[in-house]
Amino acid sequence: MKKSLVFLQFVNFLVFGSHAQSRVEKETFVYAEKDGASLHLDKYVNKDVLFEGEKPVLIYVHGGGFSVGNRVNALQIQYAKHFTEQGFVSILMDYRLGITPGLEAGQDEIMHAVSIATSDLIDATAFILKHAEEWGIDPDKIIISGGSAGAITCLNAVYEISSEGEGSKHLPQDFNYAGVISHAGAVIVSQDSLIWKRTPSPMLLMHGNKDMQVPFDSYSIEGNLYAGSNYISKQLREMNAPFWLYEEDQADHIVALKPLQYNFSEIDAFIEKFVMKGHKASVHTVWKDEKPGTMDAMMELVPLYLIGWGKTDEEVAN
Image (cartoon, rainbow, N blue to C red; front, side, top):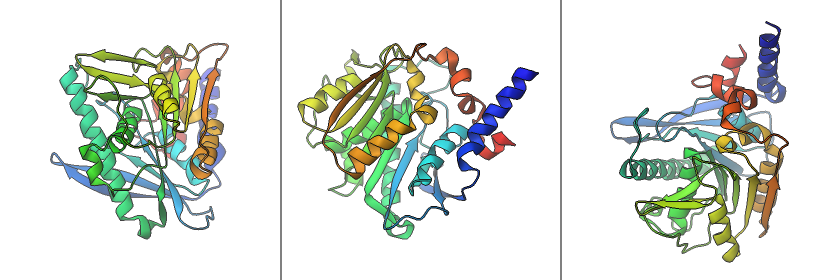
């Protein structure tokens, strides 16, 4: 009983600690109609934060193996609200899920799922750009972030633009994301290497080097390349493109979730230095906890994520 009470107090602290005094307003929009379904995004703005000029934007793309998940999760919402406290417009979005839950996906199904999720992120971006003047946002300061499948979607969107793929034609010709914050992601393509035709967005690549679900480095399956954070960072270094590889030593796929709660100092520093100030740096940080994080410890590390599906942070607190 005592342990349960402590846990509930901990969750209440997570929910109310940062946001109790702020007035965040949410609006929901349909950004596309595809395959007979309406695709939604939620826009969060903190009305108590004064920001001079056009506001930057952060879009968060949820994980779930392209088979489960959606934009409504208490910890994801708390992550979005963190950026609204700095004057950002934060966006949480849904996308089409291309993999059947509970069934092992083949390569064709995986590639299709990555493709349609990437297409949806690009269309959501186009929708935001269309409303840039109305919403008072800076079209040159749109950052994308995601975990696991969401990180894969973000990295593939950046690669689509930088390799001048078909999907990039849905965006203005000179558009590029201001930055990408990837939590355990990879670029997944049907080729044997990544070929960048344009310098990609500055990247914060956060990844556990013992991740068995999304590779830290790379591998190929049936002609499809899974290029993880370490592989990407080596290419970025060769191109003199700005990046920050944040490697968690001995950590597994838990790094897809931990940054939603524990890495705001690194994320904020990346945004300030790489995005806002345009630093052209290459950074490699190796972080090693005394006890490396694992997916087995999800309830200990990110309880709000597990209990918060389909709920807002306020609903979990109540």
